[in-house]
Length: 331
Image (tube, rainbow, N blue to C red):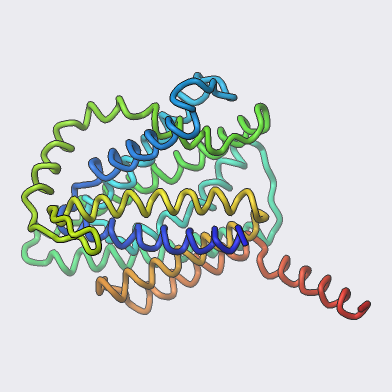
């Protein structure tokens, strides 16, 4: 029952979170910093109350290790959200971030000296091809949409290229953080809720460097048209409502994933998260009418098939079906 509830939380929280993020980014593409700050602040306050017991509970993992992890986590979050301000469409943003498998494999080979099976390399190649197709098609769209003048077209393409570089950097940094986190858990044991709290609480002072941008967008949010919140009957600027819903759905999403990791095997978690990304992508394309060509669909298909191949979903599901079939015969 808890597993089914967790799956529901993941789909409801993560998919709706993408919707509110796109609603925010469409009105103010550069609002990534205020969105990231609000999410970090909410999760940090919740963790301080319920996980850290108002500061009375000492961390199981030394703070110096969290400081390293937090630096990487803060950088990844800020860069990923800021990429939306660099001509990166939301569908491409979601597809590109699905390339974490590639980054994990590359750094795993370099840092941990890991070796993988042929099927793993094949799946990663498929993901790479899919991302390449989607990136190439998006580049053509940016060039065609900015064809008002040669100078404007070049400037738009330059910003888009910078956005791709930012996403690539965040992808590699996220993979490096995952490897670092894996080594910490082997040494000190798994403390997911504690890591969630410190990853969001320790970076808060870093937002002082972004205070001017956060303040400017807070003013813009306050100047948006009023919106009466259903049920509550409270009226507030619509952009603040979108931000509030983005924060709540982000928390629901994270909690759902956390419950899922404690209740299910990693294979199930991978499958649920992959399907959630696919549903979010489809909804973004249909509801927001984002440009998506047949080539984009082909690239997306490659990414998700490659992801499922990497997690060996079919092999494990076949093995599970075989076991259940044998048990039925015995009965």
